[in-house]
Structure formats: C-alpha cells, structure tokens
Amino acid sequence: MGYLAGGLAAPTLNGREAFLLGRSRRISHSAYLLSQRIGVSSWSFHNYFRSTRDEDYRGPDETFALLDFPEMIADRYKIHHLEIVAPHFAATNLAYLDELRSKLLRAHSSLVDLPIDVKEMQTGGGLSDPDVSVRNAAVEAAMEWIDIAAHLRARSVRSDPGKMDPQNLAPTVDSYMRLVAYARRKGIRVIVENHGGVGSEHPENLIRVFKSVNNTYFGALPDFGNFPNARTRARGLELLFPYATVVCHAKGLKLNAQGSETDYNFPACIEIARQERFRGVYSVEFEGPGDPYSGVQDVINELLRYV
Image (cartoon, rainbow, N blue to C red; front, side, top):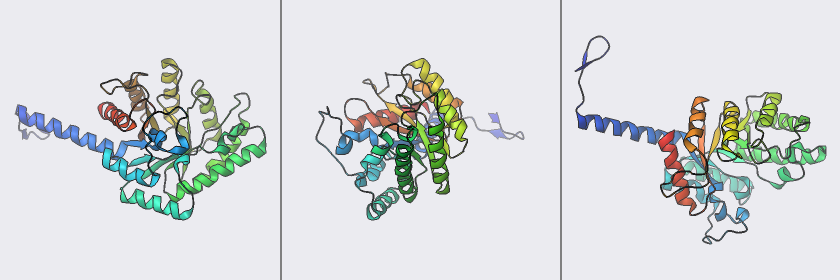
C-alpha cells in the first residue's frame, strides 16, 4: 500500500493493472503526438506530383491532386498538420484556394508551413542577389505566397535566402526585414531551412541573419538530414533550434528493414530538439528510395518512439 499526500493510502496496482495503465499512457502519448506534434510534408510524395517528379524516377506512374492530400494524410496516418510546397498547387486563384481551405477544414487539418519554392526565389541570388531588381522580384513573389498562406490560415512560410554572401549579408538582411514586416501584419512567420549552401555547411551564417533581423516572426526550420556530417549536424541543430518555434523536418533518407534511419542518428536529433525545448511540429519529409507511403509511416513510427 502506497500513500498519497496527506497520509491517505493509495492502492498498489497488481501486475495486470500496472501493465494496462502503462499501455493507456503510451496510447495517450501517441495520440497526443499524432494530433499535436507530428506533420507530413507534401514533398514526401513529390514524385506523385508531375511538377516536382525526379527526372530519373522509375516508380509507379501514380499522381494525385493536392486537393485530396489533407484527407489522405488524415485517413491513412491520423495526422492533421501539413506542409504543402508551392509547386504542388494546381492554381492560385481564389476559387481553388477556397476549395483547398475547405478540404483542410473537412479533414480537421491545418497548414503549418508553406515552403515558397518558386522560380523567382531561385533566379540569380534570389533574396540575396546584389542586384536590387532581382531581389525585389523575389521579395514580391514571396509576398504573393504570404498572402496565399494567410488565406489558408497557415502558421508560416519557408522562404530561403538564395545565394548568400557571408562577407556581405546586407542584401539578405534587407530582403528579410521587408518580408518579415509584411508577413507579421498577416500573422505569418517567415522561416529559413538549412539547405545545401544555405546554413548546412555553415549554420552560423543563418544565425547572423536571424540576429540582424531580430524579429520574433523570423526564425529557423531545422532539417535533420541536410548536413554534410554528424559533427556539423550536432552543432547546426544546437544553433538553429533556439530560433525554431513552428516546425522542423524529420527527414527519412535511408531506412532499414526495421524502419529505422541509417543515414544519420535520428534519436540524437530528437534529443537536441528536446534539450533546446522545441515545442513545434516535427514534419515528416521522406526522401528515401522506395514507397513513400510506407516510408512516411516509418518516420512517423520513429517519432512516436523517440519524441
């Protein structure tokens, strides 16, 4: 017999009761993670969208419409936080956006992030180009997608800087100050992912930009997989997670037969996020070989194990 505060006796659980209580707690934690802390990116299925299909793709000639994405993810994975990348939109007119918003609501889902992967952001140096006209085109394109994100009631847009010059970050900072000011008025955060050449090899350069812009509506989207080696990954995640308030990428690259990531130390990334008190969404971004449906499930299972 145990004792509660105040000296009241607490009944001791027998073996089966303890087992059932532990099982109930595990189920409750998994349900919490699925409903609150785990999301799925449409990029996980990029080969099923013709606009982003790899040139060397040899898988099934399957496609699906973005309008079906919220329901499919909710039904198959019981997940309701989504990332939808810009190239997967079939249109951007008001009728289409209203229909997509209706589909999100019907699936009891929300858009946690909208990555702005459009040509203006990749022309020249994008937001970091020394030519102000090139930068202005990127900023204006990003603003249009911020409007779309606001219409869909998204939390953030991912807007990467293009080709930053570490010796002169002024063009990059200027672009982000304009973007963040615009996005903040609409309740949208602007976040930056560590991609190759942008924060992956030298994540400290992104930190310099965050500090220069100095706005709570501007921050990081840490991606577990986008680092050249384990040492840079650990250092980079420790630097980036303090600036991450919305979402990070739990990337699936090389999963073994048991569904565990083998390309990098997945549990170590989760531990860094925990130590840095990350409270946002772990968005699954599967980029491995094989069936993306099962690949996404494997990454979800890893998150359920370690978060």
